[in-house]
Image (cartoon, rainbow, N blue to C red; front, side):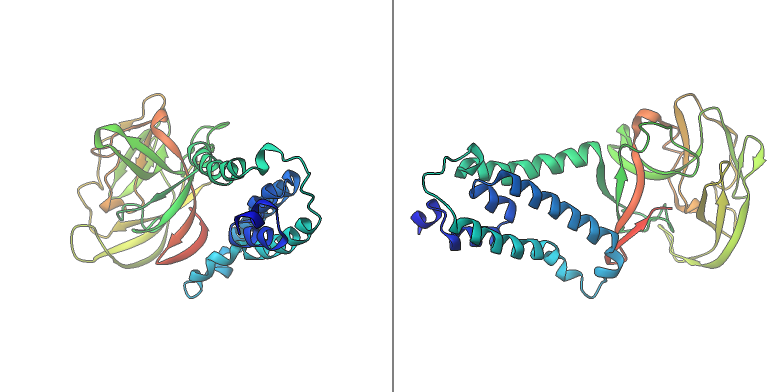
Length: 299
């Protein structure tokens, strides 16, 4: 059997493409260009599926997500079979057609690619608490864009993730104050530079609180200078953080609040101002929420 694989028998090539991937199969068949095209095709298929995620991966059929690459594997298996039928033993092998080269590309390259994406482009995070309800709920998983602020600074209304060294932890909050702003809350209403931020009452409901029974709360929509909006929650009765002193945001720092205003540990106490260097990126898309796969922008 080993000899059949070494000699690139059609059934062996077809099996490698089907079980592993057409990328590995084409490397095995000395066809680097085809391997690259199959890799690009797999990426495009994943992007296509992500675009249709809410339709394709509902809670009932989320277990079928392993079928994303199946059509390409089938096509690659047939393609590999016919390519191997034309194989000539005297064909000189390129470096990637040897077992160590193919495995190195198939195993090592995806690891470095994933690490590169996580380090420089997008990183997944989850929400352990309820401080950002209703935008980000307990148990939600979302992607953070790490290049969102390469060409422009953070803006009011952006939901961001940042690192606080003294807590050895990441936090997700919303930026409401920019460097130089004066921020204050009075009776739960946000004031920037002496002006009240426009709010629109959306609804009233019982909301699960972190440290107690459900509480009667009001859902509002805040509109920040520049036009961005966010939905927030505030309890009907003033809490200890609904009335604050005036905070003057220092240079290269930001004032952040949780959307669940009475259940948030943020710039009003504890966390304080968030430096620009501590911000990891902007919360971009939720991909798992309420127990099933989603694809929703984070407001």
